[in-house]
Amino acid sequence: MSFRDWYRVDRLPTIYCVGCGNGTVINCTLHAVDTLGWKWEDTVFVSGIGCSSRAPGYIKTDSLHTTHGRALAFATGIKLAKSSLHVVVFTGDGDLAAIGGNHFIHACRRNIDMTVICMNNWIYGMTGGQGSPTTPRGAITTTTPYGSGEGVFDLSALAVAAGANHVARWTSYHVKELTRAIQTGLETPGFSLIEVLTQCPTAYGRRNKLREVADTVEYLKTHALLLQKYNRLIAEGKPVPEDMFTVGEFVRRNRPAMGVPP
Amino acid sequence: MQGNTACAEGALAAGCGFFAGYPITPSTEVAEHMALKLPKRKGVFVQMEDEIASIAAVIGASWTGARAMTATSGPGFSLMMENIGYAAMTETPCVVVNIQRGGPSTGQPTLGAQGDMLQCRFGSHGDYGIIALSPSSVQEMFELTVKAFSLSEKYRVPAFLMGDEIIGHMRERLTIPDSVEVATRKKLEPGTLPFAAGEDGIPGFPAFGQGYGVHVTGLTHDERGYPAATNPRLHERLVSRLVHKVESARKEMADYIVTNPDAEQVFISYGAPSRSVLQALHDRPKEEIGHLKLRVVWPFPEFALAEFPEAKSFLVPEMNLGQMAREIERHTNVPVIPVPKLGGDVHTPAELTKALEGTR
Image (cartoon, rainbow over all chains, first blue to last red; front, side, top):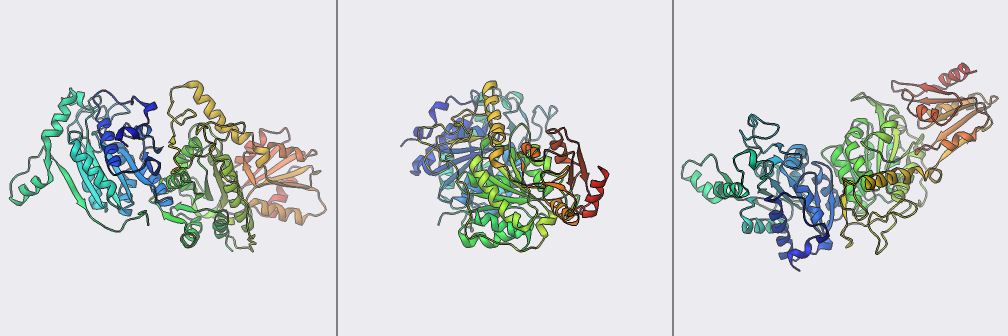
């Protein structure tokens, strides 16, 4: 099989805007499941609400497009009731970190055997560009017209602290690394979070001086600080550039997990 | 045995293999008993982080083909409303037990009520249909839980066991039959679209992991299961079917007990107040007092009212301010007299006979 065979072709084209990064993330995910030789009949994609959550609709496996923020709770039911199924969740920053924040930390705590791919574009795209828990300070959104004054969730750090077995962050620019990280997540028993920073030119970029699609991708490329490099800077007592974010694998461990097939 | 334990035993007898819940008085014993028993039967018990997650996990489990249940009380039931609508929209069989307590809000955690009877029918947004059953004894906690599974599996709608603190915490003798009959989900026929319904309005069920590759969404969807949220006619057809498949089967689902059909004064009851009505009838053997006891409350069996052709008044004792009385009223020209009781106690038989005398 090729990754293309996983698509529900009669549903294409997607609803995504021109320049959206979500398609890249779906492609990387399908490359990963295909590389592992997974069967679509044994795989379930689950999602909540938002642009990211439309992804399962374009994949030909069984798929459950649920309510806002609740995907992980639905996915927990699927995995516990039938552990032989591979469960993969697509979610976004609003879905996972705001309305679904409680389910997120508890799914990590249970370390339930599933892979969660969060398309973090710092914005509510589907509803037209409102601020989210990952909207950077000062960013302009329709609900922060004078610049966001709230703090920001570090989703990966949150997942590590809450007990997930595998946590990695990449961006829609780093497709090779992202695909490998997703593959590692799929292979790791227990809870895996792959946070993908991705561009939303329509709702975020055009309000925040990243008007062209390539502007955000360029930003993601130039502001990603490899975790190893970050650690080196810290060890050497050198300053870490404040406007950069770390990418890489934050944790891979083997804590007791729920829902792992016998 | 305690009512809540009997409910859990009924679920186990009905083949429930998955329970997700969150502790809440006065329903917690249902979860505790499931936590004790399910693992020994290769079933799954999971305590979720809240009631929203509990019903979500139940729906997820149900899509793998499992018979799945949760149990709660008013505050948790309110939290579940979002995903109850999802279960209705996606036609997911699931059983929700609500051991009712005094509301609104935190209200009276340790005392009984019947204040959620309209919420269970209409509590989630949009139009849809559900099934609700109301037990008035420990035996009925068992029997009607089994029945809730059967109806939910057959019609692919959420079914509610609308108990209350009094019945949930009551202890009575329970007879458990050697086996119980539970309807099974209709399988999806090969070559049939996953959300295409036949004459009965019920589509075949494509369980996950069987190679159906089905897409399930809470969005308005076509017969393939694909989102079609801006198609007005399709939305109308889908939502009408969701309501009609329940309403059109209300004769088939009806479950009620008629006493003294020639009576002029008739009590209509469900749940705990039914016990006081029985006592009132027993106390006045010489008077002909009618009684309609509902075991299935929703869909409301309005034809049952015709079982009392001589009726001059329907008295409706409820542990609320007249929720089902309102429904009864809209189906009859006979005067409907609510006999409300709030505070946590069930009506005394004396209160019922006083209400009876008031209508003479």
